[in-house]
Image (tube, rainbow, N blue to C red; front, side, top):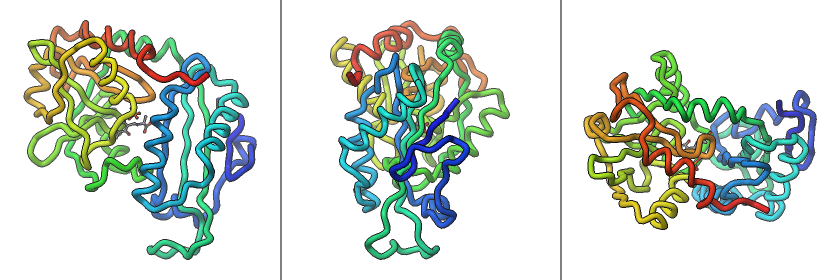
Length: 286
Ligand code: PDD
């Protein structure tokens, strides 16, 4: 349960926390966010999340609302005040509140900053990792700058809803040429018959996942071959293993795609190995 939320300089009880009705995040999705894992009380890969946050803000020309050090303090404080040992921190920055008008408001409007933390049921998540996820493919109807982590998530909401209606826990988004871009809220990976990992290269079509980046470090350390190239749904269906990466699930096995079993229908051996090693490769805050 979230007890305390940080909003624009104040730590407020959950029920009292809110932003202005003319906040541009609310009216235009003119906002960016980060989700950072909390593992045994440590923030996971905070540096990379902060780097991506700064990049997203820069791409949208939203000023950095406070120093990286101050943001880092807010995240730790919100973890502490909510007594989160295992869970997530959510940080959102909007362009601020101003009378509704499409162009950027005049200088002087201060960005809105919201930070909250939430516990995750670790036993439940581990059970899910043990059984593996089902994925449904959906057309990727998002915009041309999916590399920016904006809160403009309606295509992801609709895709996940369609997946859930079909008994799947994630949607894999497919571009107009039949290639998988990424998951609705994760990066997509497959393992081919030779044991090589395949994942789409970064670019405007996908979010450069922090978990993806850290996993690439782990793969290089373990000398596991990986190729960054797009793959089609058909190739995924005949893959030996498949999985997704995200801050909320680290490495999560995928065992069904469009109700077709991947490999032997159980979480793959390599996927399980990578899941077990992930936090050794990640940066854990002191
Ligand atoms: N989602 N791709 C998309 C579209 C995402 O929304 C996410 C993260 C990822 C994985 O990125 P990372 O490894 O940095 O978490 C890829 C977060 C967890 C969310 O929206 O809840």
